Image (tube, rainbow, N blue to C red):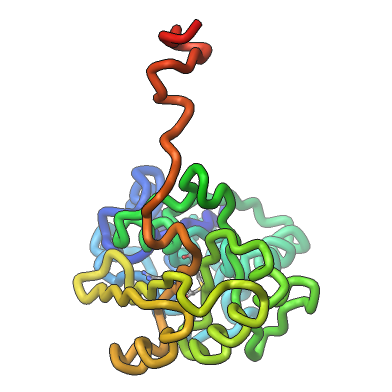
Length: 253
Ligand code: SAH
């Protein structure tokens, strides 16, 4: 059995209770050493084997899972944040299906949630934006043209850019060419929830310079949109004293 586990954004106590339990039970752990906090490994059994996937190819990862399965062992495949977001888990699950190795997925706290927490921000501010676009700039991994940052920018919703802090200048150009004004508030969150977390608040126009000044080129998210300012929003209907909900009678009815 293989358990894909979301390790959370970095802070060890941001893994789920279920994820921690699976780590305690694992006979073999394959973790993404580039971003998963190695302190999480302190919970493993003494006899548990540990492999760092940042030094392994897909066939090597699968071969290790296959070997553990043959020996009747439980493998935890530890991914950063939530495994479904840029986690490359489909290719692993398909390889396991081919080999008839059972698996399950345990979700995790994605870094885009940890970034909102760091910014003390509500992404879905009434009256400002009710949508969060999660995407990335095209790099060595291409992005379909219909999903370009420029085309999504036309919505001027909140946008969270993964894997793009090393191309902040190009991202700013795309964001402005697509529809955000130069003054649109924008933030970079480096290593959200880690002890060395860094927050940079700026505007789209000044994004490249702000990233350079802070020395941020990787392990960061770019958050763009009017909602980043957290101002001039409408109050929620749900908690409006006048508003009747399925759970509460409002004063206006
Ligand atoms: N599955 C992960 C994302 C993996 S892709 C998740 O759900 O968060 C790796 C990218 O995620 C990094 O390049 C960076 O853009 C972002 N990232 C991961 N952890 C981060 C953190 N703690 N703070 C800021 N960005 C992070």
